[in-house]
Structure formats: C-alpha cells, structure tokens
Image 1 (tube, rainbow, N blue to C red):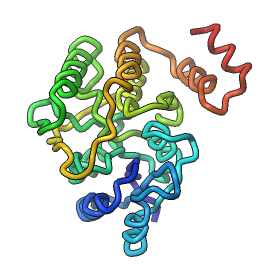
Image 2: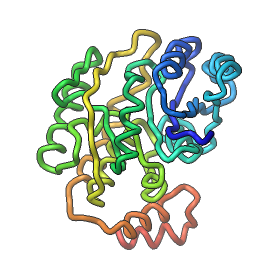
Image 3: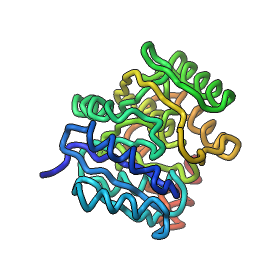
Length: 261
C-alpha cells in the first residue's frame, strides 16, 4: 500500500532513547504511513534499535543520508526519499506530539503546502527549553505572522508537514541546522502558497542532550526570516534559484545565479 504520509526523523546517536518515540508514532499515526529514520553514519547508535523495531513493523525503515552530515541535509534527504505526497518532519527526542501527525498531513491533503504545529497560537504551549531560545523563537514567530503574513505564528518550529511536490519544486537550501522550517515557510509566503497551523504542546526532551546550537544556526535563521518579507516571486524564479544553488549544480549555473542575486 502506498503511504499517505512519510514521517521523516533525523537522528544522531539517540541510542535506546529513540525506541519510546518510535513506538508512540507507530501507535498514534493511523494514516497509511512510512517512518524514515534518517542517519548520517552507519555506526550511529540509534540504528540497531530502529532496525529492531523495523523487523517487527514494516512501516519503519532506516535511511542513510548521503547529502552530507547535519540535520538539514538529513531532512532534505528524507523528503527526497519519501514515497508519500505528504512529509511530516519530527524530531527523535520526543518533544513533538505524534498524535498530531495525522492532522498535519490532512491539512496538506486539503491544499496547504506547509502545515505547522504551533506553540504560539491559542491552545499551544512550550514547556521547558532554554529561555533565550524560547524568547527568540516566539518573537520571530509573532513578527512574521503580524508583518509578513506567513500563515503561522510558529515559523521556526521543525514539526511541520509539507507537500512533497512543493518541496521538490522550491528546494531546500539550508545545510546546517534546523532552519528548514522557516526556509520553507518563507518560500511558501513569497510564492503566496497557503500555509496553515494547529496548536501543539512542545515538551523539552527528557533524555539525552539537545544538538541545537543557537549561536551557530542564528545567521541561517535570520537569512530566511528576512527572506519571508517582500514581493511575490514567480514559481519559475524560485525554482531556477534552487536549480542553480543545489549541491549538484554545475559551476556555470551557480555563476549565472550569482549575477541575478
């Protein structure tokens, strides 16, 4: 059966901690689904545990990312490998609520290209996490919602569903951290494609350590924050931008894109 939703989970040495999260996803996702555990290296400590679950449930499969290390490349690889028309990105640490995966996927089925799980809309909440990170994320989400009209109060949250055709059309340029959520929201906004949101309660991870480095990722977040503002872009222009900037683009194509930037 062809899945209706591909759940993309980037992992990095989660070890046994991934088991509880995968079991919750398998229990809570009722739509026909595949769960892609995307890892950067064969020796990742997550993989033996994920493969043990995969032996019992064929919806789970481990996928080796060949685009380069890091969560952005892992997410891009996972969406490219997705078989379903909808891809939902969720983290391996259990911070996201898997009961909402079906609801996010159904929003994309109805026509939006990005469906966000929002911590900052009525009914949403963020529990725990570094204070400065919470403040910066909330400020970015609110100002993008108020002034850029991006369609969600939580553009920075990674827990989102995407129309996979849309993602493959506009591409993912991020290659460092978790800024893909704001990149694709910004691109949808510049194309004037529909974005929607549902409230979510985000819980800080209970096991292991976070791999989020705000200082390292902040420049990329700011780049896409400011990109969200501006005139409407033709789809052809954004697609051409991605074709020139994708990692396998020829040098001559990149030079031509540079003359247009």
